[in-house]
Length: 242
Figure (cartoon, rainbow, N blue to C red):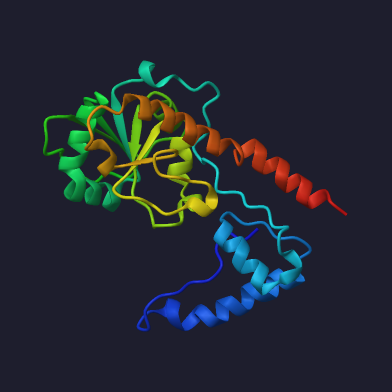
């Protein structure tokens, strides 16, 4: 199971100098493996180049939610007027300092009067008029209960790598509307803007109630192909094949 392949970066970082060695290790492991599994289509394509015998036969399973999954998704209109910031610490600080005004405007469009921050505390106060409820670090069951009631979740993540985001997976698994600062090109893994998430720009064109329902439902459906149960089924099948 390849969760990562190899690092890369500018010449002054260790990721640059170790990249060739890591590529060699990944290729060697892939070539001796009976089967490979990974979490991104981009990785599957790279593995197939390293080990052509696996081409077209590598299951791609984006990460599943590690804070539980909703057994009965609450319809959008019945949810609490909350927007979730999940990540904590420096990420919450960055979201507030850089996107605070935009988040407040989005909350107005969503009818949200509360921002619920989950994760290590940032020790910041919300600069706007909304209630800022900083929960800190919580057990997975309590995080799941909050996500199951909230309307939307804000998140920033590396462009093109959404299949690896556990927070995005958690939002999808609980039927929230995932909202990003800008488009995240992850179409290779079936994640499409305005179908599986929205961006700040999408909230500048007036009422989008119908879009919110559709995106929440689309994100939840996307998740079902690699939910915890589905991932277990695929892994069991991979291990049991002669």
